[in-house]
Image (tube, rainbow, N blue to C red; front, side, top):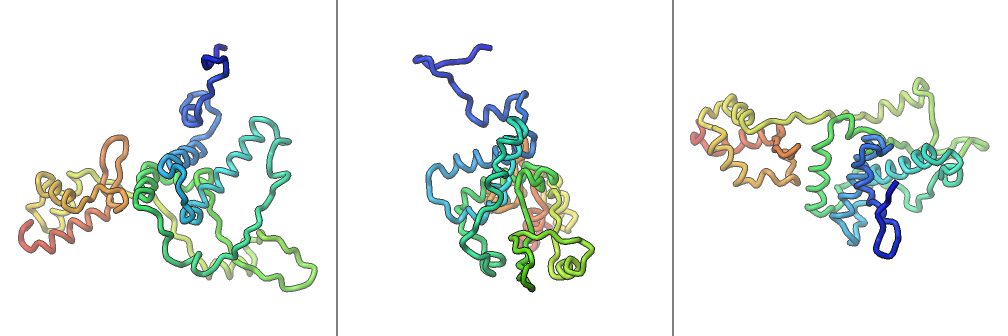
Length: 250
């Protein structure tokens, strides 16, 4: 096999993104999505300080670390796995109520836009894959008798009384792939709401331009394979604006 070399004879190595795009890449789709997201994030950040992103995207960082360890063992043998030496990390800051339920971290708008656009291009299964983002639900438990195991993570029987208690205290909202609409469908839905003069051209175009609605950070829609699709939130916003305009669109 022939390898490209520099003028001084050193091998030219491919960057990670080119490796992922090769048909012969052994990396599965969800792991590749995780890496492509982090590559894009790195391009957006460069070398700026980004402390606020740590909690915001920690699930994706954790997935990347686990994926790395998994593929090291698959490609080079189990003896090379890092989990035999580094099982758990120690956290020096206890999770607080503010962290768990407080306001969202201060993430720059351009990074929010990048994240929103990347996520919108994923389907439901890709977004929820643990190889893309590793998500866990933790409940703090105090050891109640001497000699009891003192592990950070404790697995319990889902049929146990403790599990039933946890189920009563927490509920999970299952994310589903968001419905997407072309402009003609948006106009149709707004007309169904009673605004019969609302058309794709020029009413809808004028409205989204006035609202700067294609800014991904606003969450009204997403670009998928070169075409822009609108979410239900944009249809609701159009109806709200039409209502505020009185008889203009009736």
